Length: 201
Image (cartoon, rainbow, N blue to C red; front, side, top):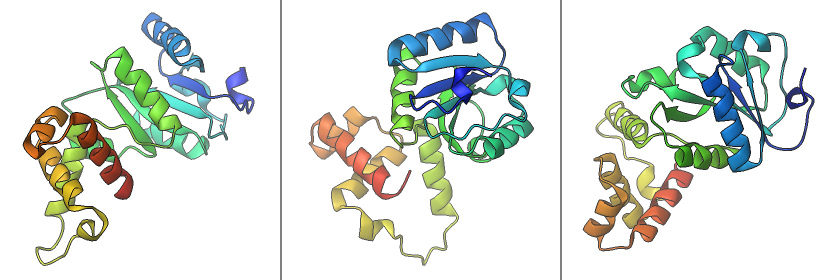
C-alpha cells in the first residue's frame, strides 16, 4: 500500500471514489493548495485496510460511494476524519445525519477556496457543514423538545450569541446579521464561532 497507509505523521487527504481525471485533478489541487499528501483510492480498494491515524482526512465522493461502504470505512478507519464531497445540495438533512462519523459536507458546487478552508478546519478539529444543514439541525432539535423544556443554551450562550444564533437559524447572512445587531461582520463571525464551539457543533 502507499505511504498514506503507513502511519505517516504529516496530514494526508484521501479521496475515496473513482480514479477519474476529475478526482486526480482535485487531489493535485488539494496537495498544491494545502501542502498535504493527497491521493485517490477506489472505495472497494480500502477493504481490509484499516487506517489508524488522526492525521488522515478521507473525502468520500458521495455519488460514487455506497452508504454501506461508508459504514464499513467508518468502522475500519479508526482515528481518521471523514467528509463528503460532491454531495447533493437538494438532499434532505436526515440523509446527511445518517452518515457515520462525517465531520464535513461539501456540495458539488463548493468553490476551491471553500474546500481548502474546510479541509484545514476539519484537521483543526472543527466540523465543516453548510449553513442550510446547521439550520435544519437547529430546527429539528427545537421541534423535538417538549414545549416546557428550558434550553440549556440560555445558560451557556451570551445574550448576543443567542441573538446571533436566532438570526443565523432564520437564514440571515453574516453581513445582514452585522447590520441588524449594529456590529462589524468580524464581530458577528466571532459570535458564530463561539456559539458553535459552546454547543459542540
